Image (cartoon, rainbow, N blue to C red; front, side, top):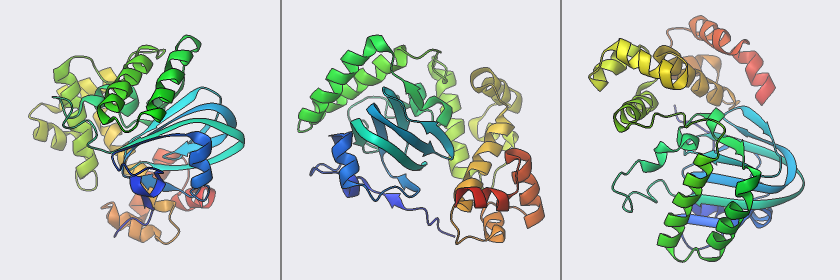
Length: 284
């Protein structure tokens, strides 16, 4: 079973010849991609800063009201759609999965930032007043100098640090390297195995730690148990597949390794509060 949610590639939405990074003003980006309002995924990192406009945008079925100076970050694979209103302005930055890979000693360095944790609740926030002029100047310089790829990398990292420091709360992921690596590896393992591995003890064994250690770390950092993190990922995939009309409930249950439709329906209703059929009616 192959997902039919369209995957948008960098070259499709970019206006320049570079495939690894694109920085553009929002008005021009929306004009070129005005038909891209259906639910879709990206195979690249995507961030957008609003300086003007309204409406809504949705990331993995969580909807946000657009306000000036809101910024959002998206990681590859997340489902996204928008419904903007009025005159829109701001900046869009798209960059490849491996954009920083050969530039930094730590290949997954950007996952240290809370807004690249893969958790929607950390990906959308408003830039504080005192940081706006600096952020705006950096985005504008980036837009004008995309030919210098190292300048773009350094500038983006500086913007990331600036935005991380202005958050109202500390980063979601722990600062010490060991626990950060452990939690990041756990989330990566879930991404690869959530269809077949559903128990914390399975992941703890792959991480060479005890289930109690894994559960304590998840509760300390994310505020929920390891089992709940796994269930939320399965539920998210179910919602993504339900948004595609072509898939029957039985197909989705099979894809997610449930024994039968009734077990899948009970699991979904417990997590979402409504049945899969009701969810589909709301989102298609």
